[in-house]
Structure formats: structure tokens, C-alpha cells
Image (cartoon, rainbow, N blue to C red):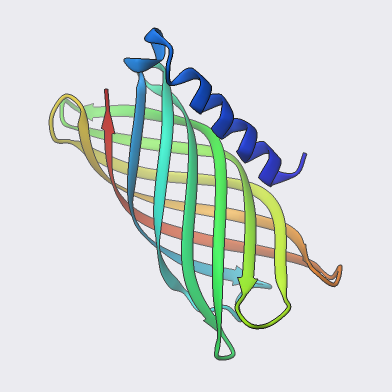
Length: 177
């Protein structure tokens, strides 16, 4: 299944269930800053800053289903590059203390790399794995840090295969109802 379609269907699912009474108690939304470092065949693209947004639904007290968008800006041989990673998957939270939790996330991701003013675009999909930690500020607000590794199996608009890896370091704020 196309990664963009998977992400769109997930966002439609979240949009439809946000109006239900049971969902209103168990959802969260968050955002923050990220730093993306492309690797492997993407190594010619500089590391760059970005931002991340996230929406999720709590399935159990320690298991969530998350959808995430990460947008970042880079350069490659003097050309501006915009990198979008959309991902969806489960996140497991393990309480270390009453105010500190570890988190592990995994799932599927969709990558779009667009070279500004140059007719090159790279599209693909892959998997991701993330580990992090978050601090509970009160009953509904959290601050956290996470490192994610995203694989990319894609191709450019000329049909050339591209295998890549991107590392995302993100700092985020999360709030739930």
C-alpha cells in the first residue's frame, strides 16, 4: 500500500473518531522540534532542523496508536531540500517513576524528499523504530525526547532506486484529554 494513502486513511480514522464520547478521554496531540540526519544513499543531503506534529489514541494505559508528521529543511549541493516523513504505528510507554516514562515506538513511514527549483523528487516507504523518555508535568501534559531511525526504500522520479536511512532527534510537548 502506498505510504501516503496509508497515512491519509489513518488521519481520516483519527478525525472520524475524535467526535465519539469514548475517544474524547483517550486522545493526545503534540508537537515539537526535530533534527533530521539523512544517511546511506541520502548522505549527500545535509542534516537539518525541522518540526514534528503528532496525534494519537490511547488503546490501553501503556499502549497508544500514533500518527506523526515530521517536516525538515536541508541542502544538497547548494539546493534547498524539503524532507517530509509521515509515520503511523504503536507506541509502548513504560513507567519508570510516577513522573518519568520510557517510550518505544515502531511502525510504517512514508518519505517525500523534494529538491527546490530542480525537477527531482524522491518518494518511498519504510519502517521506523524509536526510543525516548518523557517527563510528566501534570496529569495531562508531558515533555519528552525521542530518537527515531527511519528506513527508506524508494525511487526518484526517474525510476532510480534509492535506499536510505534517516535519524530523527526530536524534543516534544504532548497533551492529552
